[in-house]
Length: 407
Ligand SMILES: Cc1cc2nc3c(=O)[nH]c(=O)nc-3n(C[C@H](O)[C@H](O)[C@H](O)COP(=O)(O)OP(=O)(O)OC[C@H]3O[C@@H](n4cnc5c(N)ncnc54)[C@H](O)[C@@H]3O)c2cc1C
Image (cartoon, rainbow, N blue to C red; front, side, top):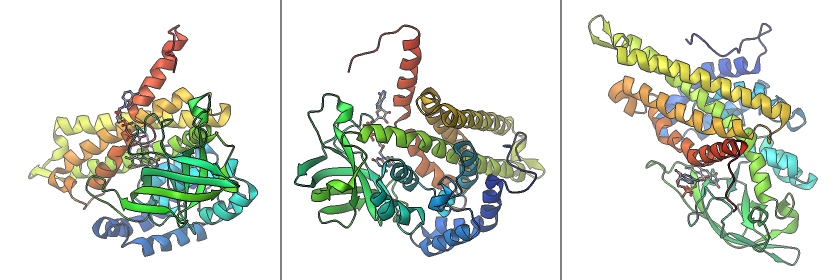
């Protein structure tokens, strides 16, 4: 138990984070063991059953407005729920707020037409379908996403889409993709060249090439990352999301709250890893009556992890409150800082927890190795750490009078 646990409990017992935590503490362990032992796809039926229970308990999609079936929580409150969900490998999925669907729901909510919301957001919000977001291409540096080869050429009352994407998370079994494609390669500013299009995954010309093995595991269904090709796919103009040329502006908007969700999920993982590390250190004996936790090296790992997790949480909650109060633009330094800072804390805490578990830490008897394999990517997706550090550092130095490089 943390000396400085998050201030979750409410006197009335209706704190959403506490309710989510209690729900998963009761229902999580057996299902987590199954997912780790048999894989995501084998456990999908049981996972759907759990989602139905979450809906019946009135805890579904906490970040979505009530009129769309959610709990209508503001960002700082949802942030704490996200931490509670992050403690379990399927927490966000069970509550209907998993990436990339949550980001796509936010996009549709803010920029979708009435028709698009009815057709795509309604079933997505209800958990009846899944979606994916296809921006990154194997041929270009995803860190600089304005360089894209995927094109959507105007043709009559629609577009013809051609391109090659990869790391399209959860494309396997998704009903639709939000695809970033160049609609005007001559636009004066690179950031105005691309648009977002909603593309049904069963449209003629959409090819799901394969699920890419991540650290050797190709996964399946929601828990997968696909290579996708678009061959002359016809997309009606009405399926453009937001204004033509606004693709990057929308992508930027999608990432702000998304980073809060991810960072708090990572803090949830850290807390669970911390609990596992401490329990193991206290219970494992190096010799009769000599627990592992008496070693100073282990005590340092525990102390450092405690301080790093608590500091990370405060930084993210501060950022969530700032986004809510002043908007995303005002909070952009904080958003960059939390992305690389929390991803680093996550890596260090998981590494220490595995070390304390010894060989057991390398197995799927605990979720540590699963997270170690899948969350290494935290320092790469949503913008690699170095991009955020460079952006933050350069913005700070500009305020000290440094001139910026013209692009
Ligand atoms: C698990 C996972 C899920 C993903 N899901 C999706 C998804 O659903 N949809 C989607 O479109 N994409 C997704 N991605 C792709 C992700 O957004 C890209 O991998 C990311 O943007 C980095 O692009 P890249 O892989 O092409 O690396 P590159 O751009 O080739 O960069 C390689 C490395 O170069 C370094 N680097 C880059 N820029 C700088 C800089 N300015 N300064 C210093 N160093 C730098 C960084 O260390 C970086 O890791 C996912 C990736 C992963 C791993």
